[in-house]
Image 1 (tube, rainbow, N blue to C red):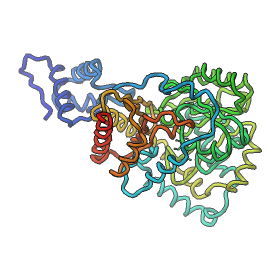
Image 2 (cartoon, rainbow, N blue to C red):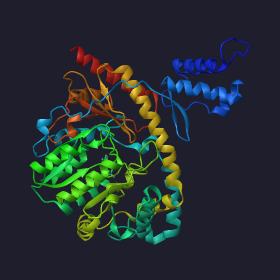
Image 3 (cartoon, rainbow, N blue to C red):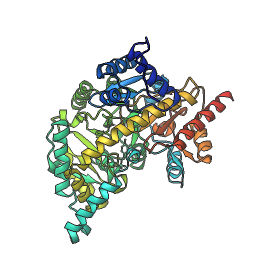
Image 4 (tube, rainbow, N blue to C red):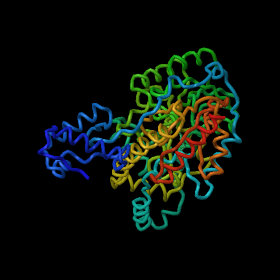
Length: 484
Ligand SMILES: Cc1ncc(COP(=O)(O)O)c(C=O)c1O
């Protein structure tokens, strides 16, 4: 119970510190939880606001809580060991273009995610931490009552004009950049945007530079198009290492680069503004296109949306892929491609693959954005994800062997763990799935199967005791493997 003793010789702010500490120790306050506001706390325990503030600031100095701008003070988790930079185990192996391997393991990972009642640590699905289903359903009903026959017909090939306008407006509103609606092609999710972008700029046998590690779905695309991938060292904090990129471009005839400038999946790394500008310079100097995977652009915990590299380029050689899958509704399968000078080719490819994307979903998302509900939803989703990230990192630090290294994502919905010793994340995947827990083993994030002792765990779920027990189970299993 919260109480202070005004007769005690102990300073009041010290007593407030002890109260918070007791509540953290008892588990009443957990990592990621927000402390009561200064005003509320001061009323509840009958001390002044400056006294509460002094206590919170001291707790922050002790690194037990952190303050977040315009939001309040939050309980910090146990951080564990950070990933070292750069994280790839074997830089020499990365230096050659390769055909993608490990496709059958990717298939098993996908199958596992969709097993009934499985704990879905293997899928990056941020929206499920706080699904927007009710408000999207309401938006869809409004659309259906207005649109009638129109809601079941074909959309224009490159997308409904109102949605393209909303997407363009959002770039203006969040990063202050002008993207013309006519330069946007609506696609079936980010995945089709990536597929079309790759086809627009490269051919079978061409070499594509990717981050190491990188999103496995994109490796599958490179494989299905008969292209080769070359990995570029990527830092857990700053994203692609630009010196390594320069070396790669000097040594190999790379046809295109495919990078996530904001929130690499699985590292959670984001490039600084300076590095984005430098990346654009490198791209321009070498005269090659950059496909920018920006599907996580809106999911930094801070709410700040970095400018896509696209906004720094005048060459028209950057194609930016976006999606509503990570920020609203993965099942709607609506993404987009800002296509630069490749727009005509992109439209042709889109027409030949799928004619157009679902109109009802496009109109619904357009309504969702226009009503302001999208913004309101993201304001709730980001803190929910940040809270989950804090909790998951703490539980990993508690239950996994102490040598385990953990990423510190600044947004998104995944943690990337480096397991100690020679532990096989693929064996862990097999054992875990027997226990009803899906994971994403590290080797699927590398075309040449690096990262066999890494695992990606998703925290994009409503938090529950089952989630906590499953993290503890995985930690115990890794410890068991380590003990041999
Ligand atoms: C980095 C990255 N790019 C693209 C995609 C594909 O997004 P969508 O579900 O919109 O096709 C994903 C999905 O997991 C992803 O993580």
